[in-house]
View 1 (tube, rainbow, N blue to C red):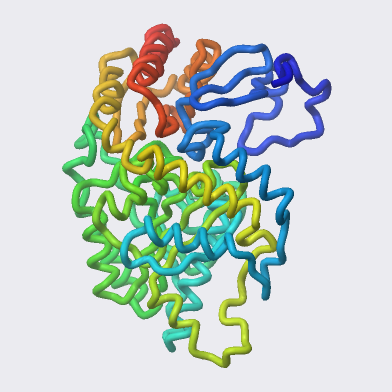
View 2 (view 1 turned 90 degrees about the vertical axis):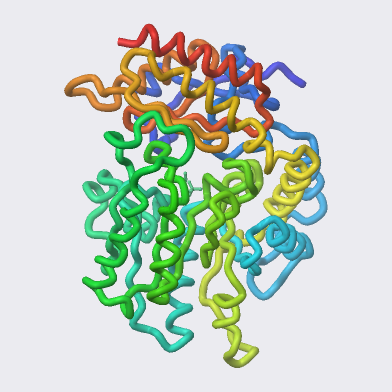
Amino acid sequence: MSDRTNVAPNDLNAFWMPFTANRQFKKNPRMFVAAKDMHYTTSDGRQVLDGTAGLWCCNAGHARPKIVEAVAAQTAELDYAPAFQMGHPKAFELANRLIDIAPDNMEHVFYTNSGSESVETALKMAIAYHRARGEGTRTRLIGRERGYHGVNFGGISVGGIVKNRMHFGTMLAGVDHLPHTHLPEQNAFTKGQPEHGANLADDLERICALHDPSTIAAVIVEPLAGSTGVLVPPKDYLQRLRAICDKHGILLIFDEVITGFGRLGAPFAAQKFDVMPDMITTAKGLTNGVIPMGAVLTTADIHDAFMDGPENLIELFHGYTYSGNPMACAAGLATLDTYREEGLLQRGAELEEYWQDAAHSMRDLPNVIDVRNLGLIAGIELAPIEGKPTARAFEAFLRAYDKGILIRTTGDIIALSPPLIISKAEIDQLFGTLSDVLRDLP
Ligand SMILES: Cc1ncc(COP(=O)(O)O)c(C=O)c1O
């Protein structure tokens, strides 16, 4: 391979970076120029251990041979095929392979290009499904405080992130929210699922009483909320949500953009928790992050509700130019092969206890006010510096990067979610370095 170190563009101004403090970054940029398995290479030639699977997406690690080969071959064979009124074999093959590993009640796959688009797709499907069945009054969507469902208007509306409400106006009408499940007084330092908080699901009954169930199309939640700081669902919480949705004819959507593809030790969180939603939104690990792709998985009941009009008419007025793009499908198939051959969709369960012990060894370090974990995810919450929320965790991120580990922070919470190929020695390195960082932090 050619020497790729010390390659940096000489002008950083034009690129307006997403979810980044642009001015701060551009004064002191952090650049990755290569990646292999568990490590990134920086532009100054250092190796950085990937503690976050990129952005929760490179579940099989980096530059995995099967995926590299499949994508390279696909460009030469069929680079693009129109997504509407035309098909190509790999889109069908990948859909079948996804259904093979999905919960038993999932039977159909609709392709998107990202988690955000999967969420919009699922919300639109939910409303159109009820209409198709003659229940057109069901248009309300219920999300949850501290939920993250991507960046589009539907997703930010059902999401529960304050900054979206501050910056982007009134968003979708007819949305309501369940309370979040973060109960630090009762649940701090819980290993796995917390004992307290299942009753918070019962708030859905209050929402149903307020709006009447006949106006509610769907409830969308992340089975485990990742982006707002690793909020593990309390025991029995998801079961209760499912039961209340069933009682009132409301669809339940699990946003598994993070939890899908082995993150919690099973292919999907629905299987881990044994709670079957009506739709699952996915992206990220679907192609190991290599080519942008998302998918919505649905039951036959939802799909079939659209399939009874005249056969020559389009049943669902929705889709993207790149839905089921051949390159993405090739990456997806090779990713699923890699997961299967290396047992990666189960590896999170095998490593869970070791990972949990390593995470909870951070408990007595300065400023640590909570540690939480499930599968191969951990959240370490720090006390904020007075008057400077987020500053302490961000400083930890910078120092960790300098010491050779990539972590992610959200607010004052450190979130860890490494590739599922991580070894025990690398888990030790990740938490060993992190504890050095936390010990010296202001
Ligand atoms: C649960 C969840 N939904 C949706 C998204 C949005 O995905 P994307 O950034 O691919 O649009 C994310 C991204 O982190 C997510 O965690």
